[in-house]
Length: 131
Image (cartoon, rainbow, N blue to C red; front, side, top):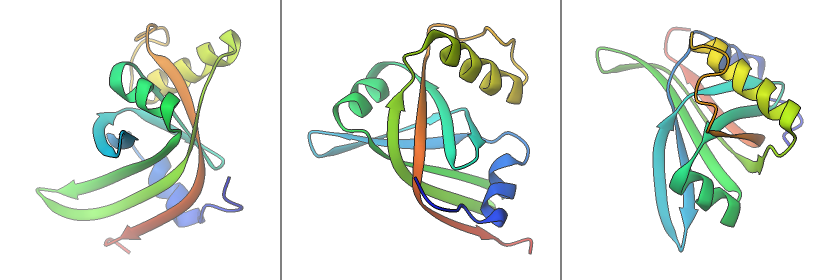
């Protein structure tokens, strides 16, 4: 995990909900998919299924990109790289799902078949064109 995610990057990550794009890799081929996320103290929480989940179980190194734009003009963005870990504990699983669903205005038990994953952030790059 990174020693410190800059406060400016944390502020961007915790603003209003945005869609993140998760990049995984399998057999030397990238796979990118949109998803919801929650950021907490150097860890990004996501839920996933299917190919993304299979990929990160095979290779836990991932990248995540979040951006806000205004009619196609970039306002700010954050890119993260880190290591993903599937949440196996039932209580923690429920807590992660509830946090993400609350962030996006969904019922806390929505998407209950998705698998929670935590990404320990190793590197972060960010930019804010509003500043």
